[in-house]
Length: 324
Image (cartoon, rainbow, N blue to C red; front, side, top):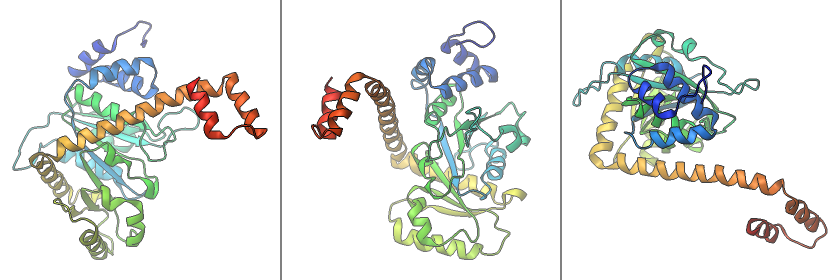
């Protein structure tokens, strides 16, 4: 792993990151995003450390997620609200952005989006690219969350790129999922099809200074009555993020959900499920590498010719290739 002409091992970089070296932390995150060999060494260190509490913000484009995240950082720095009142010395923010078709990196810059906190030593903000992943989350995001935890961040906020109604994957990476909607956000059937009701732990009606807040709350309440019979009923918080209104209420709602997860045992269960999903994704990624090798081999071309001649079916061909 080279940066300035010399190689620094991941363990040394992680030690530096744990003592507040932001350059070392940024280098480790870059390794994770590249996904090459050293990324495995970084993951090996990260997954042995504490898991940070993760809050995910998702919602349709234009809902004001970035402004909401910016305001939330200020509230977070005050610590967990009562009854916990735990201090939070630092907060990590991962802003998942669209991928540049030229550089492969994130298009939107972190300091442009959250300029108030860009130079705050207690806040670390990193833009990450989706890499074309349709769910809106890069495959590297779970590893990045664990790395931040290993570097001493007890809380990580993940703000996802707005890709419309398919953006529900944040629930697979966060302990508490905050779904952001706006007045006039659309009919209930669209929301149901998007899966937002299933993934939301807290709903935010942002831009609540506009007409239609009461109707939006009513629609959400009605859908929750029908679709969420479980022990936790998602709270609905109205905010005007641009003015800072309702941000403390949102942070308090997140804190209450955290207590619920901890006291009910759901926090450990959710994290175990996330690890199972992450392991499956790693298995799929590793398998795809082997498939590419098979496709590049002579046996694959032979099998295709036999398929074209009607001498073989795709299933027997696949079994033969995998067996080889």
